[in-house]
Length: 404
Image (cartoon, rainbow, N blue to C red):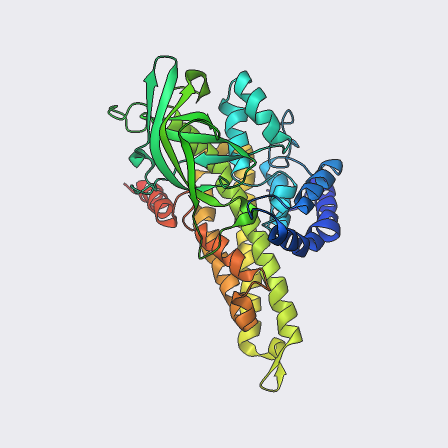
């Protein structure tokens, strides 16, 4: 593996870093002010649309898609340092570049498994940033970390599917621009193969029987910039059979294909969050004095900063190795590394953010700094896309198998 970035990556990094300095960071307080004045906190501030337009003009758009037909044509290894940069402003930069979850995963699903009609109706406006989407999988009544537990029913009735179930923490669903749900449920609940019982269907938000019931809070935050995390009820919702993605029984496999890139994208952005935290720690330590000397001269603070730098360098190398393997041997060949970064990165970044909060005192848990909200997002990623323990279980089994 070559540790140097190639010429295209360096070019894109330079453009993106300049975009962040010139447009994104100055827009952070503006977005907050505009959101406070909106009729609904779920509406998109005008400055976000301005950022999106500027990003498109500069070619900083759909960077996550390796297929040149739909995206920038970057490899995972080329995209990794770019996603890290956007992670420094996680509530603005990913959206500005049309690289925000859950839309990224949904676009990947449609690009890989959708038919031409589905791509025309839903993928194209998503690629253009004209609409948003949501992925409806997690349910409150079962342990959704085991996807075979999903209880939402997708029943065939002539030329239609009838969908009945309740989902929650459905990211992006509160955003009024969210026009389409990808819903995972069971078309064959009694099937012998528990991994062939599930299917995925496209459900337009305005379909009769779809109710976005409420926003779910995350550590007290409603996560407006992300489009919220909603409880959604599907009460005998009818959609045409043509809204099936792929084939019946293919939902579990599609979910796995979707979550692989999603996990590494989260880890890439998490490193950017950690870098922003280190920057804030250093600025705070230099600017504050306690017990007769700057915080920067306190031994414990120096230890926190040093440990954070070592941790970030370790994590970045593991993420880059994983991205390289995904490019060279495929997602299946990188299975162990994908699980390793999913376990290691959120846990370590949460620890760095915790130290940064401590260094900021009361300011660290306030709305005057981004640390508390970013901490909530990072801590949530220890649950999202499969909780750490599920990945530890799978990874340990793979290790043990070598000796059995």
